[in-house]
Image (cartoon, rainbow, N blue to C red; front, side):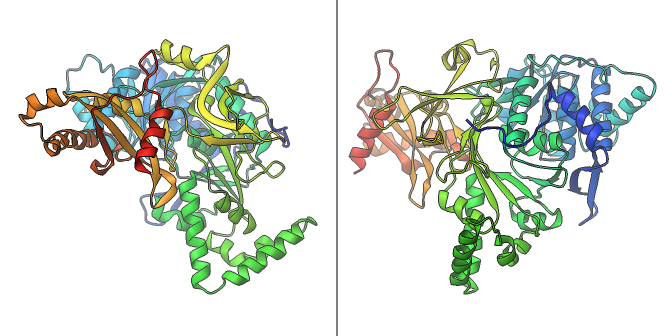
Length: 580
């Protein structure tokens, strides 16, 4: 495991964290973001931000939401951050929802989580108005709170008015939020894993879980009040929430909100970004553009020579990378010093390439269920191709090791989730005596660097960090009359060998389909099934769609265990042999 190489402040809860941040960093800038006035950047200091948190939390309690579940859905923005901490630091349980989900999935997660209030941006107003006007007994929402509404409108509350009202309550002596006791062992955060409504799991996390991970991060990767993080990944994503939002607050750093992928380079300059958290595909694309630009300018050989010289000098602790690659650093704003890549494996050439150019790049590994980071690199422990060493508070072992030393990664420690909420069967399958069975395959080298060598047993992890649970899509496919069973799997993208594309193998019953379509012609059977696949694609996020060109049809049953579970690895060998 990683040793603690940096000092860190002990925190028992997120409320403890914000109180310590207020005491030490009250006059530091917490957030930077664009206002409605074009080009104007607003800076919010910690004292103002935490006053807003206190005011909103106080008003939420005043509305009768103490101990209740409250959802939040929006773009990355200041109000999301305020909402999250106002709920978890004394009000109730926060339920961040994926902003990219289609309406049908948002509705289902609202019902399943039994939230009694939802805080949202104007982008979701139409969905919320439909929910308000429907007589749906499964929808328990009492309060709809819009971030962009100036004043209360019928049944919709104004976020801004709530803060003003909460501030008045505090001034009048209301201390229900300020003095609220936190039980760090109880669930205060409910995070849904990536998935369609029927199968996604709700991960129950506590203050203890998240705080343990924050202290681990701080003891291994350094950030200070002089750093500014660029918030790019969706905030409902546990990687962004912990590492790109809570960690900067813990360290008194600033968070700046990215305006979108096309604006990254401009935002790096405007906000003077020093640290960026993201997924491999973004860093890989950035690196490709950098190297292509260098090549176009005819400077490739010069840069290669500079890398050789600087790498040689670094052996003697002389670092001139920022000096000799000044032009590159200036293009990124001149302050950028650290990339942290997670959610999927990063190309080791890209990681090394950025490090050679003077932008420190770390690879890490984690899961929603581990709050999330399990292992990461740092300046002391880096080995390209690995995800570094296991965090200080965690234990990791490899179980069911094969002849190559690869087995399932199993994790134990204070950042491991409490349970899958309302899902004892799934909890029992993955949590055994405090050990979380990740389903990921990996191994340790002789120096205890952790390597991820395969995907989860069933989960397909795309290069952009999205997780796809094949059982979910299989369940949808299998609903079509005449389909006996199916298996969804990923194969390497022909244009990008590091990414995966979804495929499906479908077992159909010719006799049943013949009765339905009045034909046993194979082309007509394919057409019948593929039309249904197209309908499924409309119901799910784009990254879960299966191209009609990537479907295998068969009447032969899939290979299964005695308990009728598909033997996926054996099926994949069969599929690959056929394709070869």
